[in-house]
Amino acid sequence: MSHCAVIDLGSNTIRLVVYEIRSSQDARDKNRPFRSLVNDKVMAGLAAYVVDGVFSDEGIKCATSVLRGHLKRATALRCKQVHIFATAVLRNARNCKEAVSALERNIGHSIVVLSAEEEARLGFIGAGIDEPLTNGTLVDIGGGSTELSCVRNSRDQGGLSIAMGSLSSFTRFVSAILPTENEMAAINQAFCDLLAEQLDKGELPANALCANQLYGVGGSIRAAAKMLVQVRHLSERPSVLTPADIDELLKLCVEEPHRFAHAALKACVERVHTIVPGCVILRAVFEESGARELRICKHGIREGFLMTQVIERQREGINNERTENGSN
Image 1: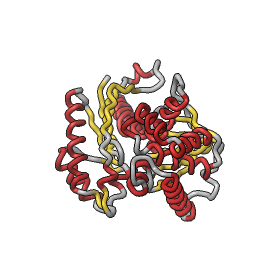
Image 2: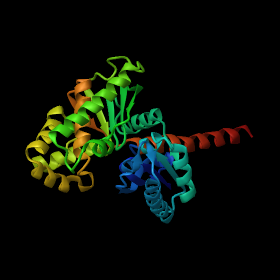
Image 3: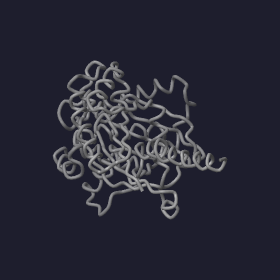
Image 4: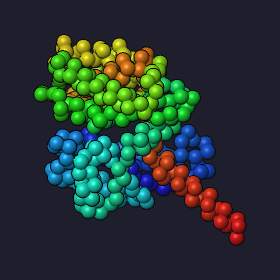
């Protein structure tokens, strides 16, 4: 067994996950060939450091500090491999190449910037690790973007990346901590406009996102589930969300903001400001797709990255070595 670290440099959080990679023999009796040992996130809020489309020097300093801390932890935990990938916050910046180069110089480590297509594909792979996705739409609401993937017959049929997430929506539209009803409406309208623009490009069939079933990954969706635990005094976190669930949370925020805020502080204090924007986006996806429920998936983009960039490559190396030895 070996340890591998994956650092996810996102728009809202920078997360370090250390995995134990099981050998092929060990994995035969397990559901998956890895297990998570350490999961450490820092709420860096990098989307707030994008000014006029440029990732600022302050953002580079903030990201550098967090990444250096994560790299030290990975070294202390004797990780044989450390991988860093970035998503929308750097991908969509006008100075992406310059910002990535500066970060790599500062931390002495390479950073992979995932394209929107790669991000969606890895999310699909990760979401289906425990239970294959069949038919529906996969939703990943990040801090700076929202990925929507069409799933048909357990296959990823392509998707859309909407350059709007929970944190970027908060930064752009919300004047205080919790959005007002008018601010929620503005977030909804902006997201729907961007979604319509993407669909008009014809990259997917007009009805591609229509589905009875949504699958969800990411912190914004888990935060909504945690909120329901607090609001309804549930004993465990729900694994399924419905449009009515999201409507309940949004209504509570408008009608009883103090109660909502206290529940949010208990549910996920670090996401108090992004819970509602994330819920507004999710409700818009429900509306667009016509779905009746969303199943929350345990794994997502980090595990998809681990499977494709680490575990599968290790297996390919072992198979190639066996082939070479057999031919000698």
